[in-house]
Image (cartoon, rainbow, N blue to C red; front, side, top):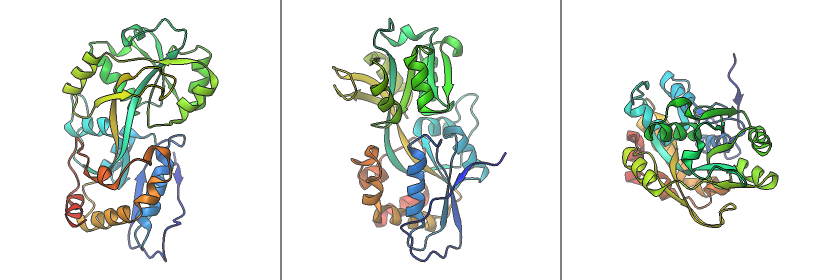
Length: 305
């Protein structure tokens, strides 16, 4: 089957005369990371840079496999998925080809249940149907990590996979699934849809569970959702991971240094394209540590910036 491709017109480019090209694995067409990847392609192609093609993908593991096979030069990946593949956890294919470029910000796990639901805690989810956007996404990955960590069998929760935000919202509001697991940035599309469609609550994860999980998983960290961030009257405890741009270690150092310079030059434009990026600074993006090593070209570029 032909892979879906979307080529972004390079609005920032001057007379482009590229000698090479880049292919960028992004995310599903409904995800905010697909257009973000397209804008990054514009930036990397600017100033006579290489042509850049942003591909629609299923994100996560598909993007890693694309990097490993040479299909993609860059990809957007949740750090907990990249970390799992890089350290080759049990029954997981090893991926030594991943190298970190920069961070796009945070994703927090939101476990959403109907307002009048009898589900009051994570333990109450046992035996329930939980809606998730696409398998292999940060929400499904993190939910499975939680299940394993507390000793639940894989089938303790029934993961119901949805191809779009709208379908997930409709089934949740009609009671066809008892909960939703959402892991995207601030102002994510599914929470926006839910707010206008039906009433809901967000579950609070126990602090001791959060601490134990963080201690055991270096790619996750504790998150406090402020009161009134959604419809929550009190602060809520949960877990989060970073969204990172990774590159193939096979990209030469000089190319990476040029990409870093273009990113810095156009960073104000980049952060203006979506609310999830508005508070991100260039220094935060390039200096935040990740669970996988940085590309040597990134390290060299940082010395000269």
